[in-house]
Length: 164
Image 1 (cartoon, rainbow, N blue to C red):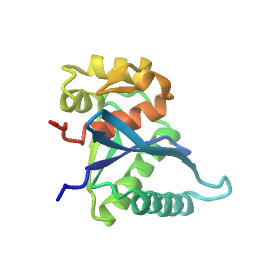
Image 2 (cartoon, one colour; image 1 turned 120 degrees about the horizontal axis):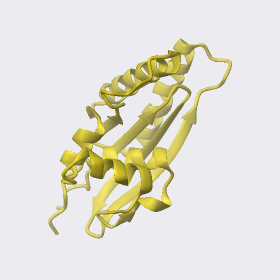
Image 3 (cartoon, helix red, strand yellow; image 1 turned 90 degrees about the vertical axis):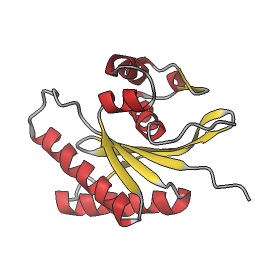
């Protein structure tokens, strides 16, 4: 009996929106199974918006059955210290808790970690993929917008490479 293909949920938050992608590694390379953007209703206060994000992420997890989730974290040297950056960090916490509550292995990763896990050799190379795209295990990242590229990169870093 074949083992199910592992899937990873990659998440990227900003102050008002969550981007996500479910990625798996097939014999042909990386495949984006599904993707989307979530924006909580404008009239929601933070607590209501966080609950809304949690519910939506639970729906994504139930629909696509990933086994792991990874949240793209800001770099340690990020300059932002304003309200938007603090809200992003809170949203990231909600995303991590939502995935954990559904039994997924959860990780938060910066470009240094993503680059290392993908075998790219450096954060600089991971940043090149993030900013400009390129072929990553058979998937052309150049066809994806930057937030989605970040979701795919952080998800792919969680997947074992297939050997077939």
